[in-house]
Image 1 (cartoon, rainbow, N blue to C red):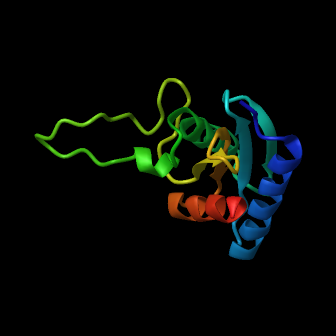
Image 2: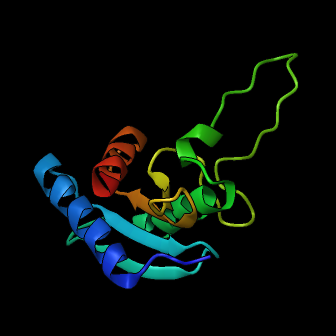
Image 3: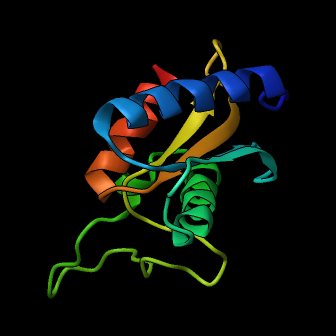
Amino acid sequence: MPDIAIDNAHRVVARGRQAAQEAGVNAVFAVLDRGANLVTFSRMDDAWLASSELAIAKARASVMFRMPSEALNAPLQVGVPAPHFDHIHAGGLLLMGGGLPLFDGGGVLIGALGVSGGTPDQDAALARAAVA
């Protein structure tokens, strides 16, 4: 099973940075391989320092569960059993918008992207723009 190639990871980040500039958001972008290892990382000038760790945690959640990080943030309902995680899990997962799994043309998981710098909705939009 292949991991994301560095050139592909750089293209994803470049598209994300362009979208962030257009949106007026100073963001951080982290691309992990399918084993949750950092492949590339980019912090825009003046992005929040905390966003560095948050972007990696969103990417980690997406690669480990093979779904967008925001999909893992289902609200709890009283009296209804449901699996639930805290927003920040002991393993370094962040379950809010901004993380997307990355798949190759055949649908095989090759890594994940994590974005942080805006609201969870803004981060999710930037991640979608980066992988489009």
